[in-house]
Image 1 (spheres, rainbow, N blue to C red):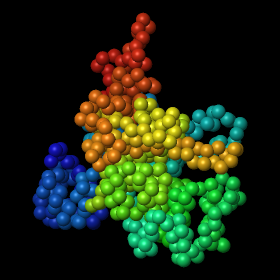
Image 2: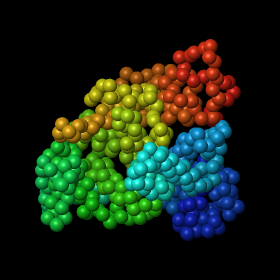
Image 3: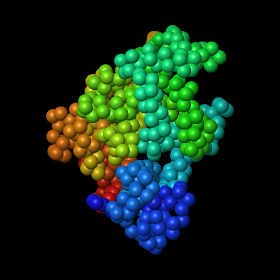
Image 4: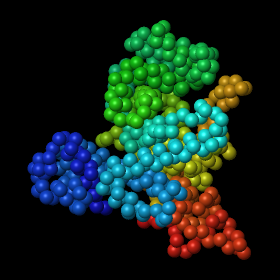
Length: 484
């Protein structure tokens, strides 16, 4: 093994979930109680022999047990602690990893506290701008923005929801749905199974901006005529999720322990959307085609009758234990640089607060609408990525309802280059040819970046009124962002 694995908290959590004492678990693993105690307290690393015993005794996927959320939590903590709220040099990566290993729950609560602070600050700033508007007061409490809380839910389950994914694939197989006729077959299934008829209308409801409207009393699902074929199929599959698999969705929402009803409602929508993507692009068939086509998004669109964005998002969810696909990151950004969707099954991490790196090709996509842009990029940890970016347009349908435009980004580590068609012509062994990008300016340690928007937290500026550099910020030697 290349590195020592200190997964004591995972071992302890597994033991507690099974209702076992340390002595009982030690006996099951054929270990001494004192040795198990050392493992759980990260005083000794887990050996391959112990990992194999854990896998066989408890029937857990070995790769799933080893793959933990440490890297994600460390990255999120690093960004949160880069907030100017925290003075002084930030903790090193090694220190943060020690905190996460010792108590991942403490790390999550610290992140929740920081998000509450962010929420309160934004609300107070809004109140200061319009003190006369009493409706702005709202609720200044709450641990997180509901949308952020739901994003974190999907983020930490690696954007793979097994019960829904498997239910969608089972339905696809049982009903013998064909990708070439998915619209007609989903509409027929809704009528046959749920007595719901689909009607395409110019105005789906009283709200002229509605894409989908379901009338339970008449059993009618109205879809906007502005929706294209892939979007109509997606909305029909979404309705099938709510009508036929609501029990699974409710169980998942209950297990998530969200802090507000708003978060629960948002998660229900997110889970129904997840089911919809899994039904239109069933796991095994989609994963096999993706592998055969070397993850060519446009070819996969044609095979499954899906949109560019739908295919990119589905590729980022192929993390089923025992049948994992290439780990991709997926992101959607608006023209102002706001990240509206994000997920990473790789070591690539997105900024939770503030803007993304301006050198990332997802921003350049807006300058060349509809064209797939390929980028060979290198993060500060020297991990290289092959990423694509392309704009997608959401039709408004009227002069006073202009179309919305987003940029979608999809990428994977360069080590998977042979499995990705977009690596054609790229010398992945030439790291110097890779564009140096980062997560966010305030936590990026690249001191010579000409695109830097503001200095990183923990650094000391060097200001010389007689000298001007192409680099916007210069720093005193020896005072840099603490990195490992």
